[in-house]
Every structure is written in C-alpha cells, then in structure tokens.
Length: 435
Ligand code: XLS
Ligand code: NI
Ligand code: NI
Image (cartoon, rainbow, N blue to C red; front, side):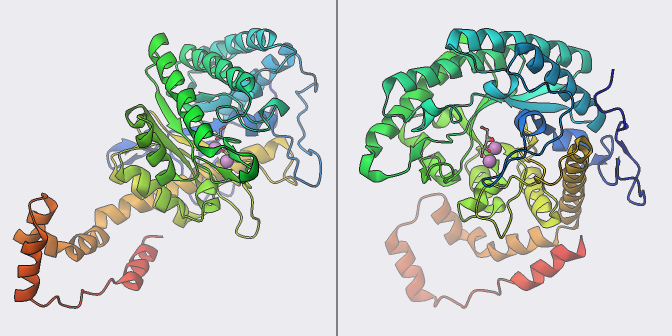
C-alpha cells in the first residue's frame, strides 16, 4: 500500500527536464572532487516538519493535508506515520533523517507512559531503517513545547522541570544510540530568558553546564560514539537564548570545560536571526574545528522570525559548500532540511517539490563551489593578500617569538605601505562567472 500513490520515485533527469518530479542537478552517483554527490551532501529530512508540521502560523491554524493521519495521539497512529515517512524517504532519495522524541511518539499522561510509547515507535523506526537502509543522522528531545518548559529545561528555575528535561535527554539519547544515530543535537529553544528582572543568569548558565556535563557522562556510560552538537540560535521563542551564535557557544563550552565533547550544528535561519550570514557562522565554527552538521534552510528577508523556508538561493548554497569542501567535508553530520512548506503549499506533493528544490540547490552549490576551487583564482588572491606574513617577520610573529620591541625596530626602519587592493568587486565578479 502506498501513501503517495501519485508520486513517482524521484530520479535525476538533467537540467533540460521539464518534469517537476525529477532532479535537474542532484545526481547522487556523480563524482565531484572524487566523491559522490550523495556522500558530499548527506541530506537528511526533519521528521517534525515532514510528518508533524500542521503549517500553522501565528495568525491561523494548520492547513496541511495528511490523509494517513487519524489525528489521534495513539501509538498506532504514530507508528503509521513512521511508515509514511519512510516511503517519503524512499521516493525522494534522502538517506538520513532527524527527530525529536515528541514528534515521533506521543507525550502521554506520565513520563513512564511516554517512555513506553517512545520505545514502541522506536521499534517501528528500527524496522523501517532495516527495511530501507535509511539511517538516523541525529536525534534530540523536545524540551520546549510542553507548558512545563515555559522557562526552559536546563535553565528552568524549577529543579523538578530540570530533572524532567534531563530524564527526557537520557531516554532520547538511548533511543538515538539504539537506532545508530550519527549524533545528538541540543537546541536550547527556551534556554534563555524573557526578562532579566526575574532571571539569575549566572545560576542558569551553571545549571545548563551541569545538564550538559551529565549528558556527556551518560553518553559515555551507554557507549554512544556519535557526536554531540549544540545548535545556536539567538532568540525566538525566548527573548535571548544563551547559545545565541557560534562564538557564544564556543565560549560557553570553553568556560565550562565542555569544549572537547561538543561540536556545532549551524542553521541558516538562526544565523540570520543573530545578525550574521550563514557563511559567517560556518566560518567561525570551522575555524575552531567545530563544524559538525548543518540545518539547511533559509529565512525570509521581510519576516523577522524563523520562517524555516527551503533553501533555493544559489549563493547561499555555494557559500555553504565552499566552507564544507575546504574543511574536508562533513563527517558524521549532514545537510538536514530543517524546513517547512509555506502554509499555502499544503498538499503531499508540495513536500516533494520542497525537498527537490533544496536538493537541487545544494547540488548546484556543490558543483559551483568545486569549480571555484578548481579554478583557484579566488584562493590565490586571498593567499597573495597575506603574503607579507610569509616573510621572516611574519613567521616570527606567527610562531609567537616576536616582541613589541622587535616590531618597533622594524617599523622605525620601514614605513608601512598602503595595503594592496582588497579587490572585493573583482572577486564578486569572479564568483558570478561560475554561476
Ligand atoms: C528550531 C530548531 C529546531 C532544532 C531541533 O528553531 O531549528 O528545529 O533543529 O530541536
Ligand atoms: Ni534546527
Ligand atoms: Ni530553527
């Protein structure tokens, strides 16, 4: 029985195809820099958006058409959704997926009952993984939707809420481990504040660190060898989230002795909410050796919230893929479409159009980034721009052996010249040559 009877398996047909249910650029077997597109891009689908997002917005209820869903909170309904989801993965040709505990399985009256429901649904997820060969990219726990988490979990003023959140992480971590997940994500949806008048910031930060240290201990105890990723976001739903951007996360991890245990999962729309470009956030993370995974979406320039749109911008995709190629590729991580359709795009077919667009955009981004690298002019320009540092003085400074007195002697003997042109327009024109 098929849940998407009218949708074919999506195949690569090339740029000239007019078939909307085909890839124009994503050709999974095609080699780029000696590696298949499939292995470069490591696409994942987000269970919460594909299966559970009703497509509501702040002014109106859901519109999504989901004929397979009986609307109940039962385990059977949840298990049926899993079958639907894996058919979706098979038809779209996405190899990985991501989930929150509460989007795969229902939250019931007690934590014990919810854990039992999660085990039952995890059994179905495992069955479907085995049947299809699809894999779990990462799991996580939803510590932001239930009213008990109104003030956060790891930063809640209530120790009982903190404990409940910790218990959910323990369970979600075990399920992620059982399903062979490549990683586990901590997105601190409400780990921040709405008002400083009622907030003890220092105490909350200490608690959040304790929360994460316990998660690390548990990870080791159960032998989970996947990665831990923090997903920065500056605000929404909170006024300020402590893990606001890449730099803030790295600083927090260093301050609390967590640096070696975590990497970052960077999301486009969160970067722009933080007042940064995605490229900035990725570059900061990669420079610290901490770029683990990517939530591939985009915001809307005219709407000030996390609109989670599908990525269709070639510049964005090529910039992302340049950072990824330069660091030698994603390892355990991937490109997770943490993205939803617009409220008006409410049919099951729209789920396919949305993902096809995102996959084709990143396939083009990958090819363009590889072409820019093969051409080499941009990298040569940047290298030449810093070439004065390759001389004896630069080397002395970079190796930490120079003193201010050395530099003063140098400056007295040689006036500093006007630096060479930054060439920004020239470089931007070069980028356009490859699009
Ligand atoms: C919300 C976040 C969330 C995380 C997982 O803005 O992007 O979806 O990726 O909890
Ligand atoms: Ni995300
Ligand atoms: Ni988000």
